[in-house]
Length: 373
Ligand SMILES: Cc1cc2nc3c(=O)[nH]c(=O)nc-3n(C[C@H](O)[C@H](O)[C@H](O)COP(=O)(O)O)c2cc1C
Image (cartoon, rainbow, N blue to C red; front, side, top):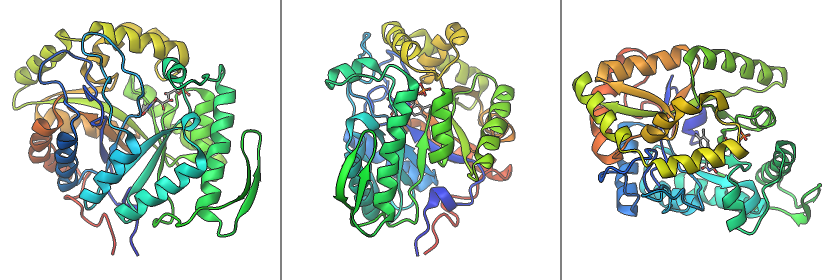
């Protein structure tokens, strides 16, 4: 039997790559070498990450770019088709799709995920987005529910339908507030016993939803000590419901042989920030989501330029490995990364940082025991 790697692999600190399907990746910068999200680059990136032993790939579902000089995220490969194709071209890595509950019918999504899981032999994953980006809802002819209570009530019913379709062998009637389904069923079921679920809510209602439904909650880090306390609270919330949840974050990484080279490259990126795009991201995000504390706005502009608000890791391979170790020590179960150019920088990370993480006991060598045949 094939075990699903993300839910059962023994890697102490899990690593993923984030947002390679989007133009610009994670860095909101105008530098000419900013990420080109062509299919060829994505395929190469996925194979590199797979061979290096990364645990997962996470795409961003984005329907409207952020404007600015570069129209950051103006070109985006659709997440489910992207993930399915990458699953067909990789061996061990989990590939997630990211789905907006409001834009995707749950019966269709249940079958898409099952299909992905068959293509990948049990390596599919689902990142659930309950909504925040108002211009996208307008572009798709919908209305973003004004309050979080409504967004997550809808999301709960949506995932309840999907989980039942994955589990139940007989057609069933679903009579909910948002969905009324007659004799609904879905075959085939996913290959894996359970499909790993990510949610990245920051709001109270969203966190409750994540604790009830997700295996991995993503949070943004403003200080590692604050994150440690957050994780303790989230885990307590989960235990009270008889559930387990791991907490991860997103990071941007600038790793070079010397500190001065790393700093120099970091400044090259942030000094060339696409300020117009950052203005738009912050405006939309702060009006509709609770991902970042509003008091942190000033420090966030630079972090957005470097990696969409991710926790920055800047320095030598030792510095970066130490930074990751600190994240693990504060309770994080892993992180996703954005590199400015994923394909140029990932090999250096693989050669220099991964062995250091192995020596620290945070990682096993590539794909060790990740899948049990
Ligand atoms: C790692 C990570 C991945 C995310 N992926 C997406 C995405 O692909 N599309 C999207 O619209 N929002 C994405 N988000 C935003 C969250 O899913 C969430 O909707 C947002 O934080 C608002 O939720 P809240 O108001 O409950 O905090 C992501 C956030 C994080 C931290």
